[in-house]
Amino acid sequence: MSINGVIMQFFHWYTAFDGKLWKELATKAPELAQQGFTAIWLPPACKGQGGKIDVGYGVYDLFDLGEFFQKASRRTKYGTKEELLIAIKAVKSHNMQVYADVVFKHKNGADEIESVRVQEVDWFDRNITKSNWYQMLAHTGFSFPGRGNMYSSMKWHWQHFDTLSYNAETKDRSKLYRLKDKYFPPGVPNEYGKFEYRTACELDTDVSQVRGELMYWGRWFIDTTDVDGFRIDSAKFLSEHFFRDWINHLRAHFAGRELFCVGEYWSDSLEELKSYIEKTNGVMSLFDFPLHYKLHRASILATKFDLRTIFDNTLVKTFPALAVTFVDNHDTQPCQSLESTVEAWFKPLAYALILLRLEGYPCVFYADYYGARYEHGEENNPPVELYSHRWLIDKFLWARKYFNYGVQLDYFDHPTTIGWVRLGDSVHPKAMAVVMNTGFVTKKWMDIRRANTTFVDITEHIKEKVISDSRGWAEFPSLPGSVSVWVQE
Image (cartoon, rainbow, N blue to C red; front, side):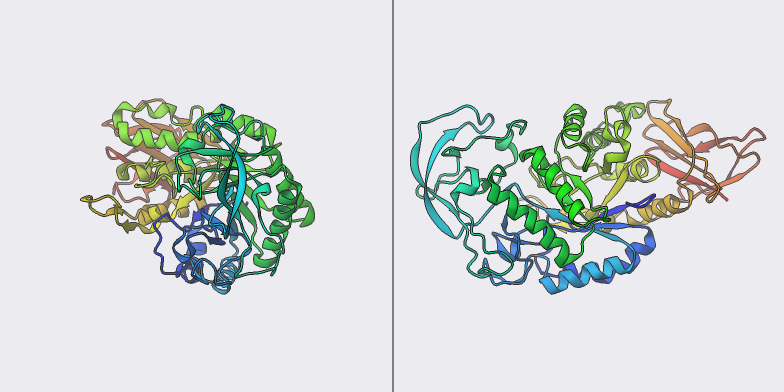
């Protein structure tokens, strides 16, 4: 992770199924680097159960990166293996890192049905049993007929899983089943009923063959793609000890490589995130979901939200070195089960809050940068349109690159108007002031430590320049419901 680094999440849930994303990334890599992005987060690159229409989280074969004819297609939703490798090379050739999306929680789309012994358990508390043990048919056999033994000879069977949720005989998806002699890892929350893929088989990382295969896959994947790190999907649903060991194993094997990792531990509870960091010995960063939910609520409540509290009980305030901050992502966008979209009017303010401050490793969402339009999915609802905020985000990225240095002074002293200044350092000596406003108080006095100095608003919301007084203080304005970024001329 570079100083003032910024991640681009280069996909959204409804990215087109045309197989052109890898080509698009290769084409756009030069401009992304020029604008100030330092890392690209890729969607899951492996073959999912839906083949070329699978977003990638319904993972089928970790070793098929769009190379083998499986699940009715050779390519994935995003393209072929060859196109993936070309895109990664293009990104790295412009001095940006590449983070791969890793899905270890489950496997989908089995090739064979097996007879298994199961016990029904409660969706929300898997320690509550709802039946005696009985035999049933389940999709638990993965033989990968299109790939065969290329790259790995391991075939997956029921012994490699601990939970499943589909009865292959009755076609029932309403129940959760524990497999015989399986135990749930301590510390894994009972939230399966909220987020799960209802036809998935959940991996049992207590099985030595499973652990060994995933360790091997990590080495194989890095050797094959030369990625610089990972975004870990659904980190909270597998043993924290497994991910701690997996990451440490790869860092030891690839000695000298940082291998940045960020986990998706979906919770707005700061205490849960802190506990996970402690249990994993801080081997990975985490997405700052508490901050995301603050931004979401602020965008809905407007003047009723106290901006002075925007960073209270957030990861970036408590563990800034391990916080990946974001505004929205593929799970929070409209039509998703975890939809918690930040309203469009507030997005410029939200991006200023993550891009123009000292703390955190910010991540910009593809749909916020380029915009997106897709069908709602429900009858009689108009298509969803997410507007591009690129013009302002590029302004923020420029300011981050040249002004986001040195001492940070916060002026979080009004419920609807807050601001802060960055005073620069010896290499970047010019100062910057940011002020945002959800109400009607449109000016804020701040100490910029520059006497009789002129500042301009790079957002162009305010055309008039601001000149600090002889003490180095200045009154920086912003328009209602807006943000202005004042940089030293």
